Length: 210
Image (tube, rainbow, N blue to C red; front, side):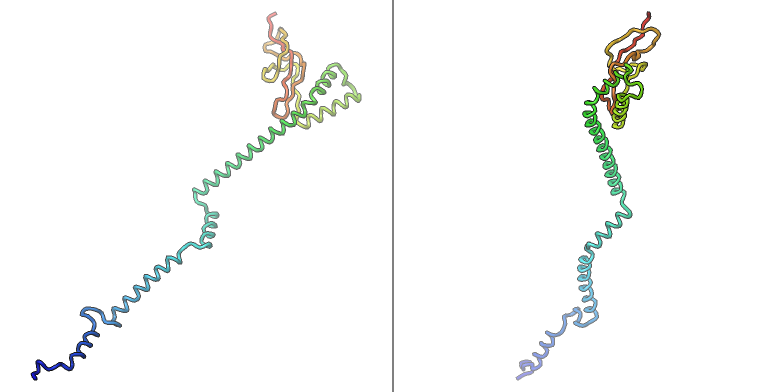
């Protein structure tokens, strides 16, 4: 048998060696390039883990709230000023409405006493409250009590006539005056606090040529 047709006894070994050999240009396992590839994969994994670690925690939120409270942004500061101003206006309206309601309720009660005060005024005009009589003492106490709750009488002879607070029941032409003037008070007017409780009924002196 010729050498060409003789089975190559070393061929299986050559094939197994070829199978185990690395391809041309591919880095061998355990070579220098494999050490560079492995850390890259670990870096990617570490980056992914880092994203999760950077998520907000409860403490982060609390720290942010404390920072905002100590050094608020201009937007939040403007909101705070607006809310503060709205609350101040609300308190003012509430206090004003409460005062108006208090005066209204008090006025309804005081109106019951106005006829009594009118009788005292007429008695005073007739001289019945002079001296230290019991009647004069009671009248003084009643007037002082009504003044303490804010009732103020008005309407005096000689006052300039004001149609917004005076009701003219009679006009009396009078020489030597230039403006309409209260000549007599028929029924006293009253204020309760800042509210007009009752207008004064008066006789008005009007200018006259003769």
